[in-house]
Amino acid sequence: MPSIKTLKTRLTSLRSIHQIVQAVHKTAASKLQHARARLPAAREMAAEAERLVGVARQSVGAAEHPLVRHRAVRQTGCVVIASEKGLCGEYNATICKSAYSYMREQKNEKIIAVGTSAFDFFLRQNMRIYEKAITVTEKTLYEDAVQIADLVLQMYLTREIDEVYVAYMRFGSTLVHEPRILKILPVYQRTEHSLWYDLVEFEQDADTFLTAAAHIYLSAIIYSALTEALACEQAARMTSMDAASESAAELIEKLNLVYNRTRQSLITQEISEIVAAVSVLQA
Image 1 (cartoon, rainbow, N blue to C red):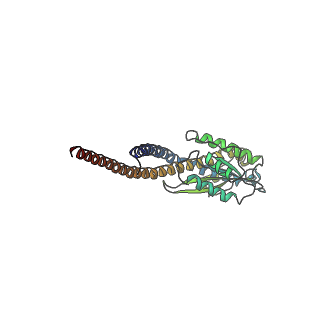
Image 2 (tube, helix red, strand yellow):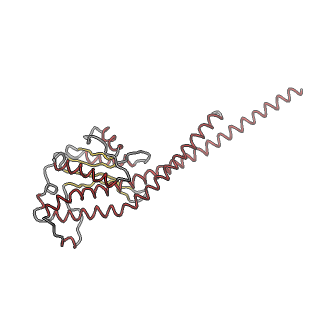
Image 3 (cartoon, rainbow, N blue to C red):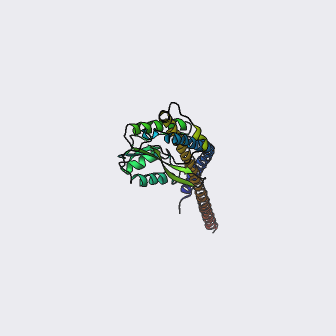
């Protein structure tokens, strides 16, 4: 049976861990609220950018634009969005494994890892990775999306990669997250555009517009993916910490019971020894 000192030390450690877990849970819950508030606007911005670029793509002459024209695929690039930190359950493993399974079937894949978790995962798989992990933060999410869009556009136009995908977790609810792999280059129409887009006139022409709008389009798509991923990450972390908190509370309760029984047993033993000593002295 463990000593009183050992049990007390374990209890102190468990209570500290329980407090930390609860703090992480509360922080994740707060960040999840902010991330969910961003989602509708981010989704709408990405959808509108995609529709507008899609309309320009269908205009006369735009089919030969470098961002629209399909070319022989020698190398495929994929932006994989995972988290910078852990404590979020199966979140990182799910998106990384989904991207890995998909990219293994492509030609000469190259991974652009967003987050240390994605970088470390694909490094272990011996896949070709961009030179470093890209770090994003909640406060500079759009600025980070612009930087990633710059990188992707540069790699595509210099023919370092011939098609580009983005892999991320799409937020459905606190408990439902769906891994998605979306093709973003070359530009193509995924959804039907509304009638008012038929009245659009491009200055100077659709080809020039596509060149100017490509960066905005990519930034909007990547920003939306980052926003979805951030919401999923915080939801996964909150759920994981909630389960950890319950487990810690159960362990504390069981260990506290053992501690009280051990303490009671020692007290009973000491009383018995005192009574026995008194009896000997009185004999």
